[in-house]
Image (cartoon, rainbow, N blue to C red; front, top):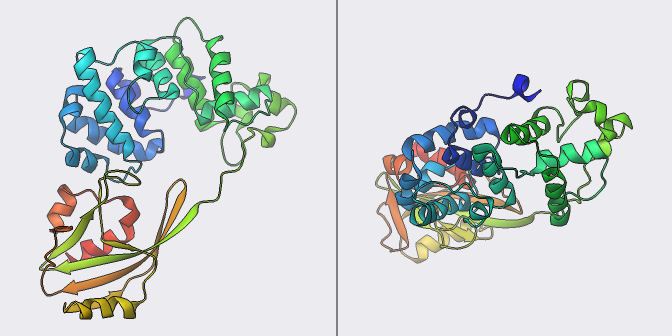
Length: 336
C-alpha cells in the first residue's frame, strides 16, 4: 500500500540522515504542504550539518520565520554543534546517541534511526497512535506518556527485518491520508481495514481516546507600530520564554485606550500622529494573544537603547518577526 500511495516529498527522495532529521523537526508542528517550501529553502542555505552548526542566530531565525515554535530551530543548531564536535559532522547511526541530542525525543530518534539508518526502532507520533488505537480498539488515553511508551514497545516487537524505514513511514502515511484525525476515516481504502477492530465493530468514532486539552490562557496586549523617517521600531524579546530572543513590535500588557496612548506621548513631549488599528489575535498551543494595535507616526526616532529602527529591506532580510504579528506586519509593509 505504501509503495503505491506514498506522497512525494523531497526528504523521501534524498536519502540523507540530515534531511530526515530536519524534515522531522519541521513536521512536528507543521503540515507537510506548509513545511516543504521552508525545508527546501533551509537545505539550500544550510546544505550540511557543519553549515547549520555555524549559522548566525539571526540568519537561522530568518530561515525559520513563519514556521513558529522557534525553539525547534535553536535546538537544531545546538544539536548540530554537538554532532560536529563529537561525531565528525555526521549524525550517529545509534538510537541512544540520537536521543541524547537537544530537541530529539523518542519519536524523532526512532524516525531517524529507522528511516535514515534502517535500525529497528519505532516512531510513534499522533498519526501512528491513532492508527494503532483504532486497529486494536484500545481505549487507553493516547495523551499519556506511559501509553505512548507502551505502544513503542508493542511496535518494536513487530518491526520487519527489512525495509523498517518504509514500515515506519507506512504507518505515518496511513494516519495522514486514510485514518484521518478529523472527519470520517477512509476505511473503504484502508490497507488495515480487515484487521481493524474499530472498523469491524463500527466504532471508529470512539478512537483514539484522548483527554480534552486545557483551555488556552487569554492574554491581552497593546501593540505599537512606531514609524519615523521611513523606519519601524522593533524590540527584542527576552532570551527565555515564549518567542525567546526574537524581534517584536513594541508591546504593553493589557489593552490601553486611545486617550491614554495620546496622553503618554504628550506627557513626554513627543509629537505623534496616532490612529487605532484593527484588533488582531494569535493562537499558540496554550496561549491566545488578543492584541489592540496603534499606528504611531513620529517626526523623529525615539532615542532609546531598547528599540532598533528597521527599514523595509531589513524587515525582509534581517530581522525575524514572528507570525504572531502577521496582521500588523502587513500594515507596516504597506507603509514602509
